Every structure is written in structure tokens, then in C-alpha cells.
Amino acid sequence: MTKPTLAQLQHEFDKRLKLYNGTNEVSDLWLP
Image (cartoon, rainbow, N blue to C red; front, side):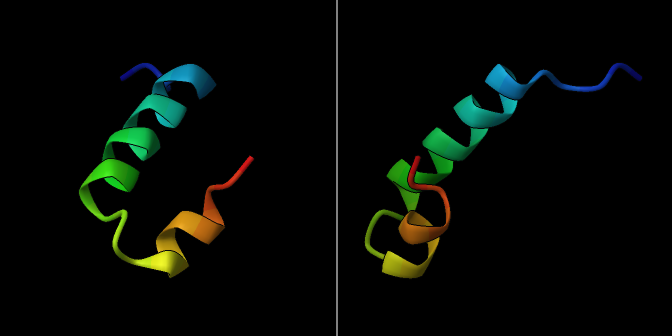
């Protein structure tokens, strides 16, 4: 298995933020 790149991880997190953008805890964790 290859490790995901940082860009791929950020893309995954961005998708999850859009899914859960009602939860401030999640958004605050991944703010740049």
C-alpha cells in the first residue's frame, strides 16, 4: 500500500468538513 500524500489527506478532510460543517469542533481542528 502506498501512503496517501498530504494533498490527498487534505482533500479527504475538506470533503469531511463539507459533510460535517455544522460541527464547529471538526471545523476548528482543520482550519489552516
